[in-house]
Each structure stands twice: as structure tokens, then as C-alpha cells.
Length: 342
Image 1 (cartoon, one colour):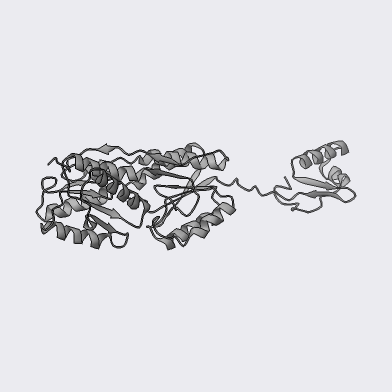
Image 2 (spheres, rainbow, N blue to C red; image 1 turned 90 degrees about the vertical axis):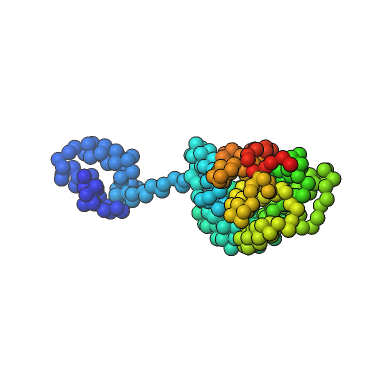
């Protein structure tokens, strides 16, 4: 009781056995037994030739929560909540917490995220690359992660300069299937609108060109319109003006994703064109946007939640030093009302 009430403080010498015997009226044997119990419980400690002292209380250090860092280009819109939901579902089932960061497809913000993740001492990282088709000034951070033994993998794209495990959709096939679908519907004058600072846009362009070549259609420089994260709004607005003026023979458009496709449909409709009667449009990623307009959008599948779950499974395997391999989901065409046969 005196120890709990701090009558005897930590590190203080308690009275001798004789004094305790006289104070409490116990036998010497009982006093020794009591001291022995308190020593076993860690409340007292004995020093030979010195006496018995009140032991210092050990401060329990809480076990560090196992944490996986997730760095995405965006968090709250488009396909990203579904990817994160898949990651969180699998990590939670395995007792891991999730630490989220967002880059807005900006290298400086990516660097801040990487620094934060290292400071938080995460057990592993799942990363969607920032501007994956451009030189990344943060590559040294990824080398540092490897040197520190922090496993990481990339989703949706990768930095080709690094030897990194990754999980992606086969974007070349996505571009090919979209283009080939328009060709099969009789369209021969096609336009690709694609993002050029991300690797997905580069590969979708590759699929577009392959389908054009296989069909032996004419391929003109003007048949590809590119934009970046920063130029998206201005490029799309310029394209809408050009298409609305009617000085083009384009009948089918392959858009980088559902967001761009929906923007084109809305903009062209406002300018008096009919989709798909005047122009057919295909998106990509099978997002909620494909069903939010006046017509359903023809698009390509993206296994959002499944990709998140697989990424979480892979990073946990990597932490356990189990072998993992790169994985590419095969896209599937999903027909809507935005394409018509000529």
C-alpha cells in the first residue's frame, strides 16, 4: 500500500526486516515472504549487501502498429476510391493499418509523400507513379527505399528506369480493343485523344497505332491529340471547338479515359453535335462516369477493387520475402450507347 501511495518512492531504500517486523507486528518469516512476493512482482528489488529498494516502474512501450503506406495520384474521385477500398479491405484483414498520401500528379508532392512515409517507418509501400512517362527527379528516393529494405510495388504504371514489381492493366491491349471496335463498326477516320505524361497514355497510343496498321487505314499526324496534367483543359477545349466547326472527317474518337470521353460528349452535345450519330466515342476504365450522362459510354474494363486487393496481397508477401511477379489484368470491352455502326 505504501508503495502504491508513494510513501516509499521509486529507487528509495525500504526499512529493514526488523523495522518492518516491529512496525506491522508480523513475524520475521512473514516479512521475508512478503518482500519476496513484491520482488517477484517487480515492485521491489534487492541489492546484496545494500538492502531492498522500491523498483522503478517499467513504462510499457505500445507495440508499433503495422502500417502500409499508399501513395496515389488522386484519392477522392474517379477510379481511385475503389482501388483504395480494395487495398484497405485486404490490409485490414491481415491486421495492417493504411497511411494515405496523394501527389496530384506532382513530383514535389510525391517527394513530400515519400519523406513522410519514411519518417513514419511504414512496413511497405504501394505507389501509383507520378507522371510516369516523364523523367522523375525523385528516383533516388526509390533507390533509398530499397537500400533501407522497405519493400514497395507500383500499380497502374511504373517507372521504367527502375526494376520494380508492378500491377497494371494491359493498356496497349486497351487501346487496341477500343480502336478495333470502332473499325469493326465501319469507322475509318479515327482520332486518339491521350494523356502523354503518364505511361498509360503512351501504351494506349501504341495499341491505337497497332489497330490502325492491322486494318491498313491511313494514319495522319493530326489523328493523335495529346495533353498533359497541366494542359488538359485547354487542349480539350480547343479540340471541342475544332470538332464543332465541322472541318474534320473524324467519325470515331478513342479517349484516354472515361473522364475525357464524358467531357467530350458533354461539350460536343452543347455545341449541337449528336453522340453517337455525328461522332462515336469510346472511353476507358469503366468508371461511374460511363453511366452518369444521357447515354451510357462504351469503355474498357479496369479491375479497380481487385487491383487494390492484389496489390495489398503482393506487398504483404514481399514483406515476408515471398516471391511475387508482375501482373497485368486483361481489359474487356464494355459496350454502351456512345458508338454506332456506320
